[in-house]
Length: 148
Image (cartoon, rainbow, N blue to C red):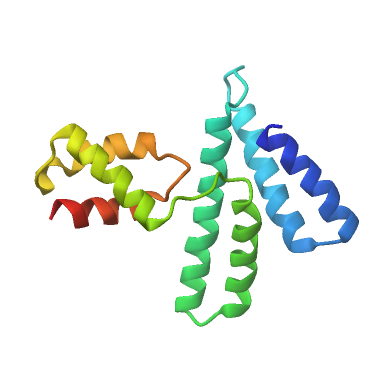
């Protein structure tokens, strides 16, 4: 079942249970899918595209929550974090730190990278191979650790 179909099923359940936080998050996701589908090309979204959209929305929610927390506005941060948690269920399982380190080590040995000058080359390959499985920020942090 595609992510879009799963979102529709979850929306129906959220409407029945009157879960406003879940409903708000799912409506935002549905809206993003509709916007991407009608963006001019007649090609429907692939599963990779759907995952990228979900990741973007999760990142937006987490960034907003971080800003709200810096300003001591937990009343605004809590719903953002709750929505991010609901949206994360549509993402593939995220890799743990050890798994991520071993995958990046394999990429480093494959590319022959030896210093921070090679970070761009490693990041390009790692971002493609680990798309959806790990956050770009986490990948970047581990690449920097391993190359320095």
